[in-house]
Length: 193
Image (cartoon, rainbow, N blue to C red; front, side):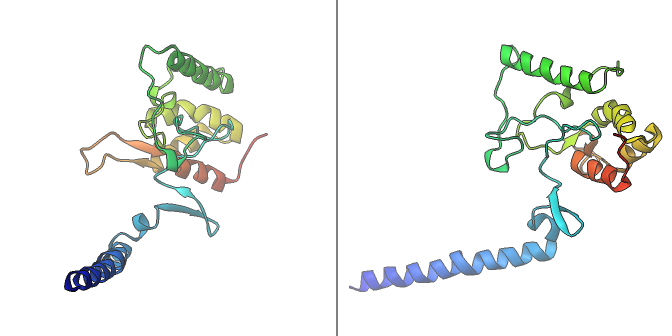
């Protein structure tokens, strides 16, 4: 009988400590030290959450910068289904997908003769990456400027403003957050249709 009582008391004590106290303390500490990250790194527009700076969104209209493709299922940028395409470099399906993506970029901006940056036609390992390289942003700049009826200089300025440096100054490459960049374009309020 003593063993059962000890087991029940232990279950209750550890449930309270590890199931209530510890999560509450960790949540409080994270809210104090990293409030933005603890709340999903949300991007706000007009008082409403418009997305996260950590998860990409699909953009296909020519007046927007396009994100990296997403291989998540059943829809792009599904945070509950983070995954890559798992297609090898010799897979014909990958070659077709890349050709289709290049064709879509060329159709949206037929005058653009620059080489297409790889990150704008290939999905990231997670399928959720909200960033593109500065080269991918610059590749799309003339199309966006034409579609919005603004100068390329204004678009280049926005790209530079939203370019993020290497992490800790040494890790990774500079990137541009597409969600933030497109929101900045919307704040300009100009679309030439």
